[in-house]
Length: 183
Length: 269
Image 1 (tube, rainbow over the protein chains, first blue to last red):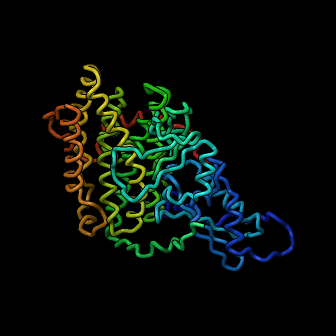
Image 2 (spheres, rainbow over the protein chains, first blue to last red):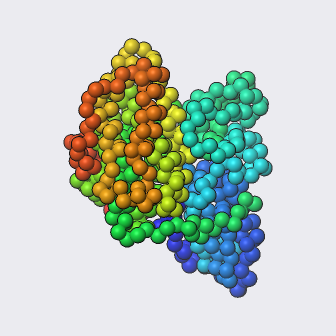
Image 3 (spheres, chains in turn red, green):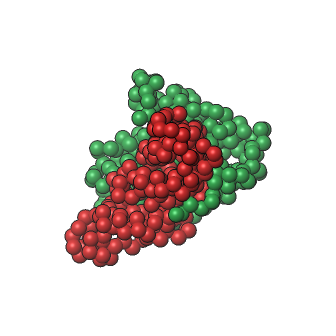
């Protein structure tokens, strides 16, 4: 299932580390490794920061990671899938499966609090709470300038350099900035 | 950690599809995907040519989302018949495509592009909203995902239609002309594919008549009331089905498919 549904295949059998047999990592160790896999379009946050990793299963020597795409058309999905596989193989695991799921659909509400702060320092306004009204409100959510905190901002483009962001300018400090859509 | 224990098996309540319903659902999924692919290509034709840079970026984003939705639909189809989405997109000829004629018309001027996208976005957002209730879990999941993206399109294009209709005499005239030309084509969005009613009865697909009623309740007051446009009397251009195309589709495909056909075994990355 999922944006890359049919491409759910076990990753190739590449020997990352020819070291002696190691114990298979625990699920926590896999999570810790994934916490260092950056979002390719926003390198200041990781795939776990973004709430994209939904499940890690360790079964003997086999590790299965389930992730969920942010936007269905996101071109970074291939890179993310490969990076997740690499990160797990770097733990000495040979049998890695990376799967994607659409359920539940990703929401910006899953972005971790410390990651929101990192986004802000990076100059991207973090998303407002998305809530669960899926349809058609014509008013965009209020956004704060990541530089000075003012709410006196103007959206200059409803779409931005990536599917997940919009463009703004702050009327208080004049800073142009990107803001996350609340999805 | 946000690791909920949602494993892929969470969609285990998915009804496996009765074999006799498969051909109709494959037809429907392909029709949905074809609409998205062709419209995305028309939107992409504005890249580098939109009136302002922000709109260049916006249309490219919208096109990218539509392609994302197409790939979701074609992934659902692949699970039913093993077909390869890339082959379907890049190696079918015009007579194999099943998109509505609305989306293949040349991009026209900015008013034409925005109005067409608005009519389509409103339909897609409402169809997806209804499809979230599908009894076929894989489709319900896709709809729940895509509808969250679609609402941004509708906000954007609804605002542009207002801006153009209420702008200058010139922009109003062009928007009215676009509506005169596009309105008859919009009817085809609500024409079912062959045997679609069996899928509606099974709760797999929303009833298009219901979607159409909601669509008209949304777009007609917006176009006529808020924007001061006049709906044309033109009869609906829906007599022919999705197998019938204008002369504009073949040239579009020859451009869209040229790279894939020139290098059929190219790697994605």
